[in-house]
Image: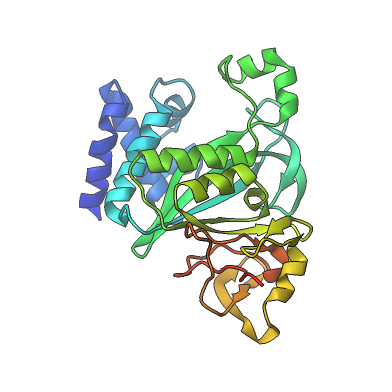
Length: 299
């Protein structure tokens, strides 16, 4: 593992223009990867042998280095080790509780992590999963629309003048495009109803030949391959009751998480893209990496 870490550290070296920043970056990365170490600078500093966290604070708060370049390096590193072909793109967002109103993009909004509306920051992430493993390859901070009504607040928080509002599905779409531009060739993609309701995201995936399994709201209007328009919950009845299988997605925060889908071989459109599945097909959704996307068969 030390050789793999050294490989990643060497890949990241050009991101930092100064030797001291490179050294601090390596220390921070090593601390993040240590088991049982909390993700704050004090804990990381102690874990890597620093008396104080000030070097890490400087790295994260004041030092100049290209964050997007670091993202691209990490994505390329992971692609080499996980494989570029046949994987799964997984879109999801997560929230982190904050106090006050000074943190960039903070605000009262729903957090799936906490299951309620809280004062949080929310980021959209893309995970890339293959048979070799899975890891995050991209991220974008979600900035609520009301922030853009206060340009001074945006500037104080470090947002550039041209930073534009983007919905969570739009952020996921941009991340998908970056993944493909970087040479990743996924077989399919998945996400919850936040992303399943986005026609732009679904049409993009269809256009590049990537299948998908998305949850959608029960009242989502869909068109079957037979040309019929209906609500998603009505489409459930196109599958016979004995053709459903329930699969474990592993342990969740509130017990075992399972997902339910048609047990027959997936029926796809002519372009090879699967339909989005309505959320009632799931008993608590947790992302997994099944080998075959499920689809609702046409009548």
